[in-house]
Amino acid sequence: MGNLGEPPSAVPSLSVGKAIAEEVRQAPILALIIFVPVVIVLERTMADAHTLLFIMSVVAIVPLAALLSRATEAVASRTGDAVGGLLSATLGNLTELVISLAALHAGQYLLVKASLAGAIVTNTLFMLGGSFLLGGLRHHVQQFNRINARFQAGMLFLATIAILVPSLISEADQPPAPEVSQTLSLGLAILLIVVYALGMLFSLRTHRELFTSVSHAAEEEKPWPLALGIGVLVIVTLLVALVSEIFVGSVQAAAENLGMTPAFVGFIVVALVGAAAEMTTAFSAARANRLDLSVSIALGSAAQIALFVAPVLVLVSYFVGPEPMTLQFWRGAVTMMVVATVGAALLSNGGRGVWYAGVMALALYGIFAFTLFVLPPASPS
Image (cartoon, rainbow, N blue to C red; front, side, top):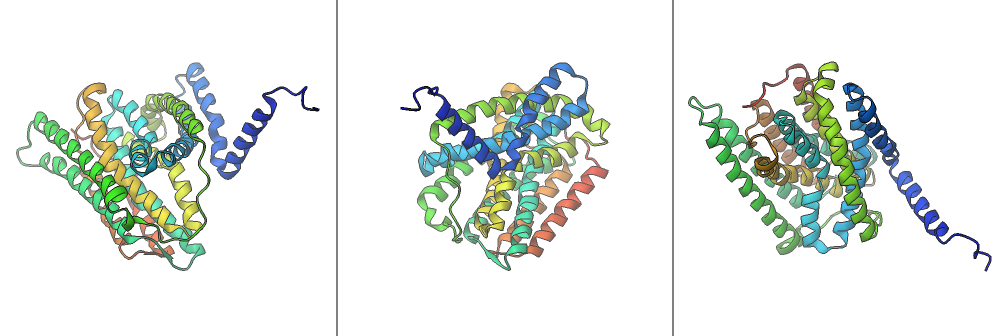
């Protein structure tokens, strides 16, 4: 009876407050969410401060990506394997997809392609290598499901070959007309999406027993309620779209002021920012001796970008871009993607991870990043 004078909303508000505090405690990266309103206000009041807007928008996207990842897990965990897998394919790399859509609408195709190539290389080298290194420093030898790793690496290799073909024909003695490249890219995009859908059917339905984890660590954190997950997903997606527009609008001038090219920004900065949430999960899992989860996140995300996100952007470009986008990348990007894919396949072939393997993967990523910084590529046609 002593609680009759307490407002009805006090207890729920307290519970929500505790839940938010617990989320921030478990993932301190979420504290950066304060930069979201900051960058929105700055864009209204200091529209010409491109460098400041660029830096603030990069920082703001990181916690939004983390929230998207948590919300996607919550929704996917409540819908079963098949639907959950489809949701993961659609939403798992939503941050990169939204940023790329904003750049696509602005006609910045070099930034779009650089971010796609960078995301593939970042996941296969930086995220995978970092997981091997951090996990190996705590655990002498770690094991993971090499069948799953080979499957993801195989899908990724197929996608890189599909990207390699239109890029190679553009280097021929008599390159085809732009219409031919667009038609080829459109057909390949549809083919890759079909292959990815069949890959999900194979791994989630017909042969899912092959993809069970070999680790025996503690279970993952409890997902959010479905209603909360859907609500956060909708709100955060809108915020990501808003911040992405600010990012794309400021990236060109900011890159010039900071001595970077749009290709470097897309290949390194956008890829690292977009994968920040997944990296946090992968690195934490590796430290907890759950390298299986880390490898699955790294290779699965890379395959998802190559087989799903890139083809979807090709299809969407017919409606939102100034002209259709092709799968024709510049020669250096194709080389880096192929080398990264082969490197990931070699790292994951044995089903065991040690820290020095991570050092080699990170060193290869550093070579690519430094080379791209000092020798920017020419804009692809």
